[in-house]
Amino acid sequence: MKGQNKLFFAIIIGLIFGVVAGGVVHLAYPDYAEDFSGTIKLLGTVFIRLVQMIIAPLVFTTLVVGIAKMSDIRMIGRVGVKAMLWFITASLVSLMIGLVLVNWLEPGHVTKLPLQDAAAASEIVSNSKGFSLEDFVKHIIPKSLFEAFATNEVLQIVVFSVMFGVALANMGEAYTKSVINILDVIAHAILKMVGYIMWVAPFGVFGAIAAVVATNGFEIFKVYAIYLRDFFFALGILWLVMCVVGYFILGNRLFELLRRIKEPLLIAFSTTSSEAVFPKLVEELERFGCNNRIVSFILPLGYSFNLDGSMMYMTFASIFIAQIYGVEMTVGQQVIMLLVLMLTSKGIAGVPRASLVIIVATCGMFNIPVEGIALILPIDHFCDMGRSMTNVLGNALATSAVSKWEGQLEDGHGEM
Image 1 (cartoon, rainbow, N blue to C red):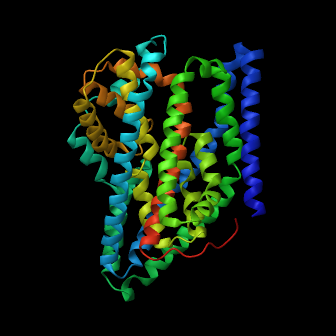
Image 2: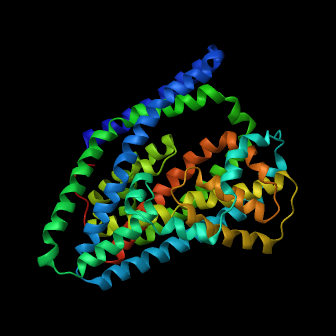
């Protein structure tokens, strides 16, 4: 408990010092802000890359071992069905909450934002072109496991790992015991590395926050105050819904779960990367009492199919852009947009700035000016803090809920 609390407070200190350092540079040395930002954010880059380094092998080993140890193949199917039902339901609820609240709050109607230079969005607009069913299939099915490893394509690694794990489970223990034991040792060694890497987190948080504050200053919060206020209010509603559902399933243990994952939540919020906390989340969910086989099976799937915060953000941002440009959309069109987002978002999970790419693609389909993405680019970092944190909570709840439904949620153990 002491070690975890020390890390938690170290991250908080890094966050505070990052804001202070970035603010000082922005106010006192504005001419050096860009150079400072480019240098200091390397601390965040180092932390993110250290985590990304172990994502692929961790997903592969834990998922294969988890499935291979499930001698009952029917259990794999049962757990998978429960997980996907949760993911689909949670995604639809998240999208719907975003749709309802953006229409009610109408941030695009009450704010007077200067139209940004569309060139700022040119890279994202170009990346969104050509999205098709073929791209969706290619993104899911790997043509090479090594390519998927090299590019950290979590969804492709999941597909291969599931097939490989099922194959091992069907071969019999006499043939596969040594292979499973080796992969299990590798998985535990990687989890051991997590403890070392997490102590770099405070420096990563410091660098990431200092860079964005030095460049944008505090004025950005004033310019986009209404949009940020409404978006985080919507996130608060989503959190309330998820926690209520979690309480009905987990009871008072929901509060223990929230205590367990406070560090992953804070790191995701500070670094805007839910991927960065994947290894730590695996460790904390197992300490919470979730079955390690279920954790290693569901959590990687959740990182591709259960991005609740990103889901809500996509409807919120898309309708916001339509409101800014005065594009009127009927209820029917908005429902269709919701379903389109539901499907297309699954095709590019793990792609950098995936939410923005999907928003651009969706806006183009509904004749909303895609250049409007430039309006939210300056504050996407801050919105990404909230949605990354929400994605972590959603995946933690999904894993805990399925473990409970399977009767394999034990009392917590280990440090807190």
